[in-house]
Length: 450
Image (cartoon, rainbow, N blue to C red; front, side, top):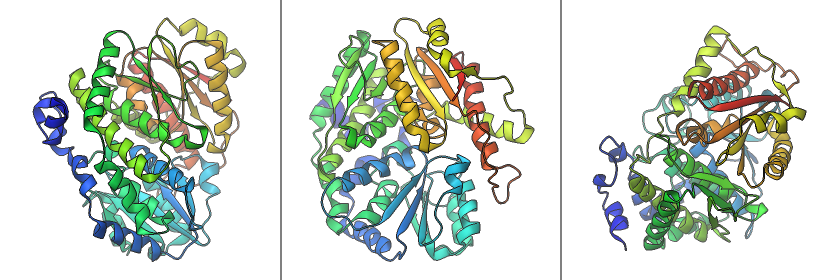
């Protein structure tokens, strides 16, 4: 094991800047030793839930790891027949279409104050209002946990408060979702067994190679994976983007890059074939990211710019001071971006659209990658990306040009119980809040109607 990896494993806080929050963020290093008894308790809990549909509500690190584990499980071996539905959007059409018959709900939030989780909780509680059909995953003593207890919810999974959200796949934020799909306890044990086999010498070598590449303007990382495993690059994208995109520096992760051989890119190919292999890759990349943060002289465990967009959203909802300027026509996107894009830049498509329209945004990403060859183009659904790549857009190197997409059609009215605004209001405020925050940081951002 290399020197940096050895220091990491003994939790040497001297690896990072003096004001790092690492002292309360290194619990993930102990997760591979999670006992089979703890995992069996999760497996038994999931099997005690009778419903066929399971809605999993979470944002960023609270859901992307869960999605990744679920996708690998779905691609291999026997299935248990559960219908696991991930919800990481406040789009009113998606919310209104959620099933409530024969449905259980998992509410996942590390802080217990996540707006998306809280509002969707109120919506689904009003329609179901049966404590035995709800599961809460949160750190100890959070507002979400307390609310669940007050409402009689018994299935509460408490997560370690010394593990940050993006490093939390091997806590309840990943394992609860997997437990609902598992056909045996072996499914839950597998990623932990894989994590124990992680090659930390390799992880350190990769961190050093990426650092060396950054010193030679290789500031982007192409992340390849088969189309059937698209959640794996998304998980790695949020880990790298939120951990390293700050202090005007960072590495730009580019999932499914159309131009991976370009001079400004490093490259990684990920194709885990089972949960064991996925566990290995998860732990290796968490270690690589933490070590690269050390080499870059930044704190890979904080997220200093994420709160700004949340505050802007809250202000808009309180004042009704929405953005009123008309968006640009989508047909002019190439022309308008050409005015802004410079050498070395990358383009990101931030799509505040119905998740059912995901493919439309993906098609646009491919078209922009062709039009602006060989520049990197990334793509994220809002508000999901606010909890992952949003930190990079605002705090990373100022080489990003955001093409924000908003829908032309009016959103249906879906009230939020206990609030004086609707899901349509919230969704619009999140788009406006991101726009305003990017502008306040001197980032180039253009809004287009789709």
